[in-house]
Length: 131
Image (cartoon, rainbow, N blue to C red; front, side):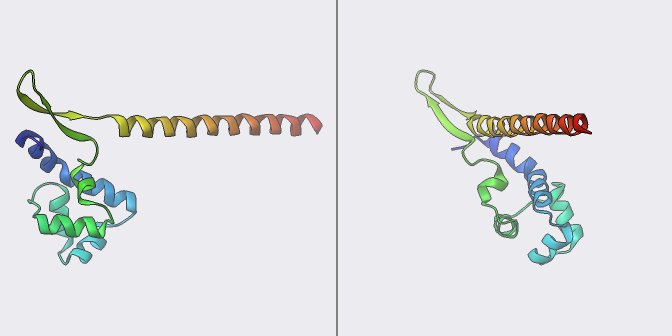
């Protein structure tokens, strides 16, 4: 169970999350708005968090973006409710496992790219030396 404060934070950032996902998909605001049956101006207000998003519209946006609603809410596996019995109060703890795994993958990809770059430099050096 999420605290009211955390729910408020999620809802305040939902427009930004939706915009980022839409841009990642390469969709325009016009495209998404058309799929939702609203005009671009109204959709833009949703992304800027100027208008409140109904649950119905949230599910429709998730469908258009081909994402799960939990992705739009940015909760998924990252937030869990923990109850500390010795203190008797619950708190929301952010889990960084997803981010750590993503960072490790990016680091590995970067290291591979560096190795390829080094190989290409050596190849070019050899080609220049033979000329």
